[in-house]
Length: 245
Image 1 (cartoon, rainbow, N blue to C red):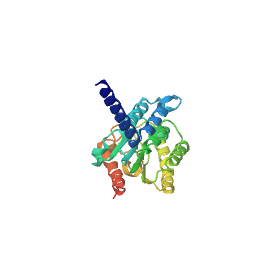
Image 2 (cartoon, rainbow, N blue to C red):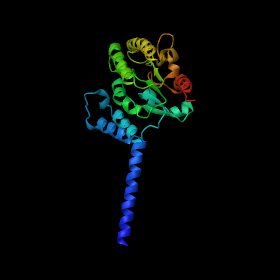
Image 3 (cartoon, rainbow, N blue to C red):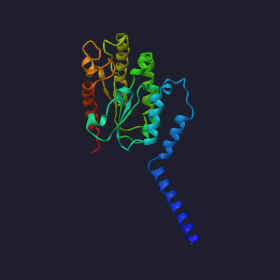
Image 4 (cartoon, helix red, strand yellow):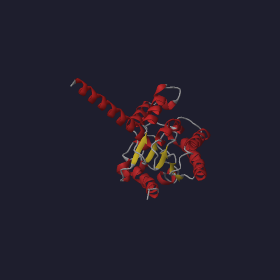
């Protein structure tokens, strides 16, 4: 009797091992675990994105819960994280990978992890925090070029949303918007060279004098429901255009 009981336990343990191995291979968990350990092994607080507690927390969530395969990813900062994209775009295959306060170094840090899910498309909306942190247009463009290199192996469609201008009520908005316009101008060329779709948020959300339209914002920086409705129409059109047949 004891021998039969022992045999059953051995068989059950073997089945559990086989099932666990299958899940690890099927969902590429080894890759995710390696990235998770890499992301959390050493925290260099000299890097601004790692000083952002939202970055560390959200990156942990992304690692633990993963990203469904072949989804349409929307990656960025609080401009992305603030809303339910599934609701605004009326589709279940979009994944919100926005992190409040994130910047281009943060995207460079985590984009490899997001590519593991073999996305159907990627929409990037990032850069305003780099400008607010005092980076020059030249420095910001250099980071975008590094991101272009990071994404060179991804053969799917990419949409880059230009940096959103600030409302006139935002302190220093005139100077900051000048820098934003310089970056967006360079991004237009970068996207043409890369074969990316470029959505110029200045054309979509700004007034004629180049400031964020107060009809689209609640604080001079972030969008309200009307602003998101406007920009989501453009992002939704890009995703629909690149739907799998």
